[in-house]
Image (cartoon, rainbow, N blue to C red):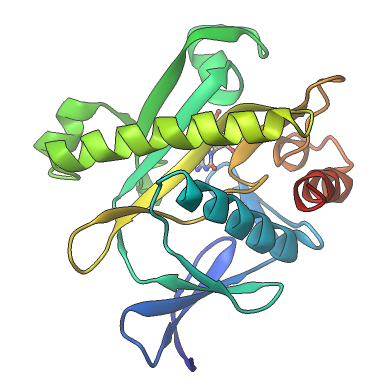
Length: 236
Ligand code: C5P
C-alpha cells in the first residue's frame, strides 16, 4: 500500500490517502492540545502508545461484534484504516462523574453514576463542540434514527467490553469519547481512536489519574501515566 497525499491534519493525527480509495493511513503525533486548542504541548511517546493501544482495543472490540475502521498496523505510529466519512458527533459514555459532567451538574469527581450516561456533542471547533440531544441530531440531519440507534448500541457495548477488560488490569474506566464513520456502503463503524487522550483511566487501587487529565490540569507525570497504561495493556 502506497502513502499518497496529506488529506487532513488534526490536533493529534495526520491522515494520508493511499493508492486504494477505500484505505487511509493514520499517522499519530506527539502533539497534545486541550480546551479546544487553547492549551498546546507535547507528550513524548504518545503517538506510538496511542496508535498501538487503540489498535489493540479495536481488535478486542471486533471480537465482541463491534465493527471498526482498523485494517492493519503499519508501524509504531501508523495504521491503515478504512476510509469513512465521520459522523459529526462526539459520543461520550460515562460511568463515574468527572470533568465537564462534574462541573455541569455539581457532582464531585468520582461520584458513581447509578446508570451509564450517554451524551452527544456536535463536532464543531468554532462552536466548541456543544452538547446536543437526539432532537437536535435529527433536526440538523447529523444522523438518521437507525444510525443513532446503532451508534448508541455500539457505544454501550464498547463500554461493557472495555470496562471489563480494564478491570483486570486494575484500571477503572471513568468515561470516554468515541467517534463513528460511514463506509462507502453506508455502514456505521467505530473510527478515530481509543487512548488516554480520549478516555479517563483511574488506577483502581489508588485512584491515580492515568490519562490526559494530567496534561489538561498540569499535574505532571504525563508521560509516565501513558507508559503505565500502555505497559498494563500490552503486557496483558
Ligand atoms: O471533558 P469531558 O468531561 O466532557 O470529557 C469526557 C470524556 O471525553 C473524557 O474521557 C475526555 O477525555 C473525552 N473527550 C475527548 N475529546 C473531546 C472531549 C472529551 O476525547 N473533545
